[in-house]
Amino acid sequence: MKKILSVALFGALCATAVPAMAQFQKPEDAVKYRQNALFVMAQHFGRLGAMANGKAPFDAKLAQENAAVVEQMAALPWAGFVAGTEGVKSKIKPEAWTEKAKFDQGAEKMRAEVAKLAVASKAGNLDALKAAFGETAKTCKACHDAYKE
Image (cartoon, rainbow, N blue to C red; front, side, top):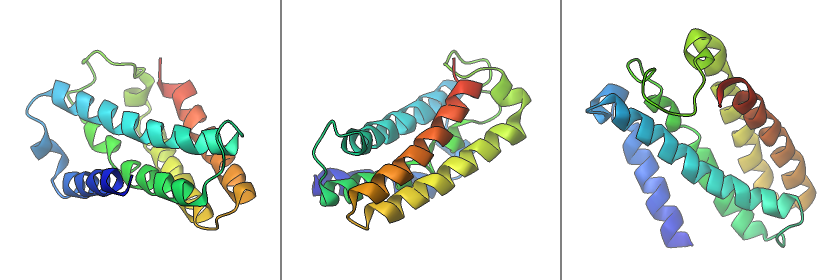
């Protein structure tokens, strides 16, 4: 798990070091990038959810590791929401483009909640994890309801 975490974090840090437009040769590349970043984030968030919802045993160390990946990944997908990707087939609703400022505010709120989740995971306390997970999940759901088909 440590090796996977290290590779994921290294990749995340490398990706954020390059300007967004320089990363993508085609609009489809930007869409694939954001989808993949969100997929990885969702996988680790789901592991936290399983612990928070009692579907998996609580493991403080694993909770902290997964929250760290979620926190790193939460910074990445937004670079893929660039001009020119509006017409590329994806699950994003047109409102994400017509309400871009509101969409960006939702992304910022999600990153703030994810940061709180990472802090809560370091407490090694299931109740703290549950509370932070719930608030983060609400933020994610609000954006999905508004902007994801």
